[in-house]
Length: 263
Length: 318
Image 1: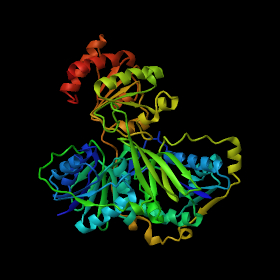
Image 2: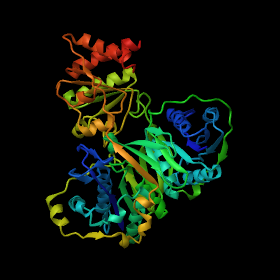
Image 3: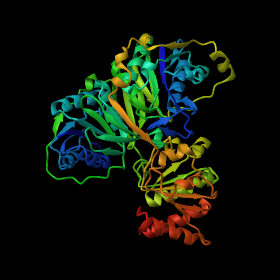
Image 4: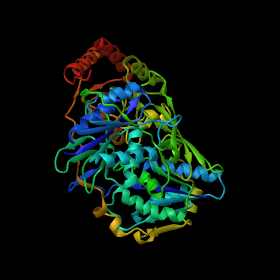
């Protein structure tokens, strides 16, 4: 059985971002595997450990410069990495990224595709669902619990919502998007790091996926980015000072009521 | 004139606040509005019928089958095509985001999610936070409608229902073809307030000293109807469950009042709460970065300040 984990490189969540030329400038920013993807990978590795004969593929759309991060996926327990690095894909929308990913996924015939619930960059949360739709598979999103039954070809899953926990039931094959309540990702062991160096690391071009160049890139996109900017700065606040803490708190409550008008 | 189809959300017998907020956002796109709902409640149907929409459809849940993205997306596709909708609008909620994505994905429609602003024009420009709010992006649709939008909660303001009594036409989703189905909702215990819906959030960080001191925040939340948030640091320490984490890998919140107790203000935390209307920071370290985004700050020990603040707020709210 094969399992595919979709991964993506994003700026480290502790990084500050700069803007230049109306775009977020990522040069010099450290890239990491999108944090939510790590939970999808962990879940895939746990399934592999419980079901002999399972192969876990870490699949990413470029750049090859992300080799270090993807090798870490191998160190954690993925068996094989596939990176699709092709300049033609730059500027693709999530539908087009899904086309490229689906081109690879079809070759692997997995039982499950895991992904993070969203990339912590543009936060679209669309690509994995588009992969499901294009494969003609169901999906279950933002799960905190996922239990496949490979014998019966079914799954149950739990999603956290504003109202409470939502219970889903369905059939395999399925695309699953992970949130952080799903599990606790492991750290790579020294043995894992050494083994990772010997695991297959494939770099593919767009042509390898069978997707036409006209179907990707900015020309094919359904949405156009006009500009990016810094969020508006919050106006300078004030520290409420005083010797008597009761009076300080009373002044805060007065300000919340009369100035900020939030209570 | 653009036509917009709104996917209304309900909670029990009533429409959720986000439904009224979608009405506000939809009106910024045009006046021709129709609605889709999914409920077994006549009271909720009547509330939706009184919003002032031209038409209303009910994707009726079947026995034991409450929702299925595939079936609902297929139902919406037919309605959007029949209505020649230019925009289909959803809330950025658990079901809203799921259905919006599946609906867009099935047909490759343009998709802009979690929007916080609409700039009118031909075509309109939509604003959405990027990198969990560290940057703001502006986008417009290319290509053919319908275009898919989700709106961020607590941004657009709730519209008043315009009145009327539009009867809902039932559309039965084809659950038989769906392979991922919502079968049950385990409603949260009464009295707990969801972070994304809360008007007041009191949030704790390492500066609280230890896990036991979170009791101060729970007390405060219970008395004031607030929700309890937390920084990643204390979630990692195991002081509180991850469901409470605010920040780039937790929840993005924007309450009227965010009270940060003993939170230093790591950039990934700020990304999750900096669109709150008013931020109060309480911290012993006057150099903490949280004070840079706070509207009001108190340099002091949370253990002393929080009980005083709780009493004073209770007095003020009478």
